Image (cartoon, rainbow, N blue to C red; front, side, top):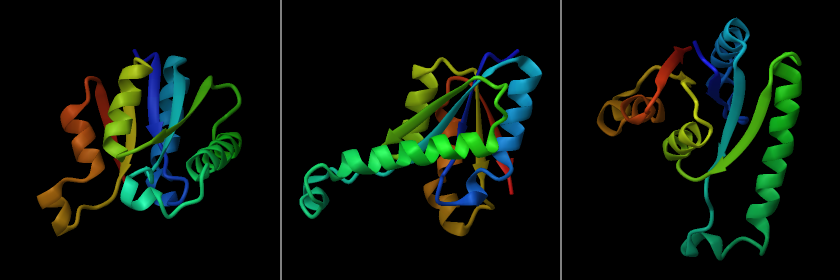
Length: 142
């Protein structure tokens, strides 16, 4: 049923992937699907903020996250699953939706925390992904 599955991980917060990654692995194994593992780095390129960082800082950050993502995949994803490593940059939900389209994913697996009051007003990343995705989205709660 699924050929390409996108799973999102925040490498700095285990709670973002602790339950979602095993679900994505199970789905990938069940359908022989390719797993696209995505982490998103916030953009620091705004002129107001970017001027305070040394030249080439963004490139170094992206490379560091790429290495961390490869280490994460080696540690947490079985070697028999086909994996694509993706490091995106920008607003989390926008990058998730963009990469889902770019990789032709037919399922997005995303972890979600219990909503706080502010999330009901602003909408968390998972809710925005669910509302705007062109494919099925599986939200895995803590």
